[in-house]
Length: 141
Image (tube, rainbow, N blue to C red; front, side, top):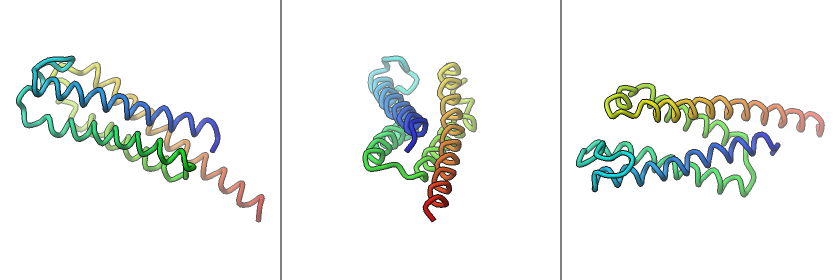
């Protein structure tokens, strides 16, 4: 795998894992104690579950990508991560009013921008990897 593709995968996996984990902690603190960076936003609300699940999914995806990279990264993993970024970023856009209602528009802009950026980069990496595979296949035929 070329360096660029590997760097994008590592950066995306780190973003998903670290941000997701931090958000899970913040959501727990807010839900059960009414404290932390999200102080009171999730206190005793049934809606915390969706945020907690989404951020847990992000953590698990980051861990999965790291474990797959250790064994060799198939080009289709770029499509998987593009799909994850599309789901998470698209959800942010679809439910943008949630950021407004809880006063987290700046955080929403940053997170959504990163999801969109990684979506584009993962698609580019997939296309690069497919071109490399075709070049390798045609030179060894």
